Picture 1 (cartoon, rainbow, N blue to C red):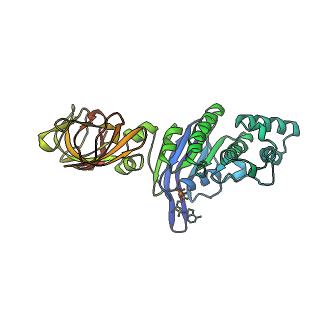
Picture 2: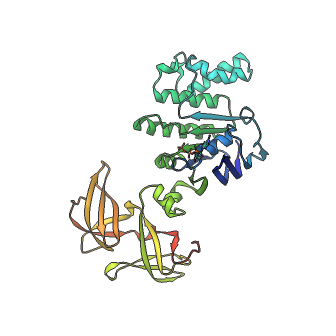
Picture 3: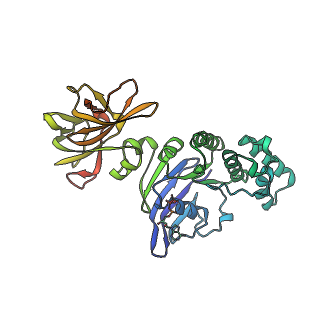
Length: 358
Ligand SMILES: Nc1ncnc2c1ncn2[C@@H]1O[C@H](COP(=O)(O)OP(=O)(O)OP(=O)(O)O)[C@@H](O)[C@H]1O
């Protein structure tokens, strides 16, 4: 198992700086996702690690070896692409054997390894089929097996599920994650789908404009985003700008319309004037109009099977609330909103001063 270190990695395409000096350590056996909007530099990062693109500056280390100038075939990586990239004129077994034949392994060992790899992705009955006679999910499993059969040190996956339909995508998330855990291989996964990144990863690396905005466990990226931009990119976020009434070591009291208040019971350094806080939709509950922290009126209601999403007009602007289906309210209805103050998250850069939060 191998640790990958990116040190101040820069990649320029002419005048475009696709990577602006990113640094990241991926631990042994860790599953890390690079998540961000189109053009933020996810694929460029992966291509630099794979050696398909030369870096402009900085270093890439596998364990303590600088591999920045090595050819892709000398880096010991397995790669899976969105497009599968299988050889159409070869059967499943031949696709898997190809990389081993290139490495001049003995025939017996090739047969053994191909057999094990097919078992691993549950495709043994399909050994003699050609890719065109397989479903998208099966083709992607062949691509995975082909990447793993060479027993690489690092597995790199570039949007591998993007071509699959929603249900298959969900199944494949679990499949890839289970396989990665069993094999224990250090894995870097590129996606622009936040649900995919959250469910699969040990750590999510959120990127914007060629820079890392946050690298943390999925729960932390969701509950404690490093910025308003991260908060909004990773799920739905209600951002409230509230006046600070008091602020000391015990916590911060924030003012609400109608003389009410909310208290965050932990220190928030530099919170003065106003403070921007984030509340996820499921952290706000609908209550009786006479109760709760805030009054509002439901402008939209969207049923989505497991829960109902309400858009609520309030004195603090429109808010989104996610409620269980057991609790039903109608469009036009007046409601109260109750915040889970223990989960309100103060946003850096949204305080009265520029100083960052502890
Ligand atoms: N070969 C290239 N030549 C010039 N510019 C490039 C090249 N490849 C990428 N870029 C630019 O580098 C930036 C990062 O691109 P990259 O493909 O890494 O983004 P991404 O986050 O993977 O996006 P997507 O999700 O759309 O694949 C973009 O501004 C892109 O236009």
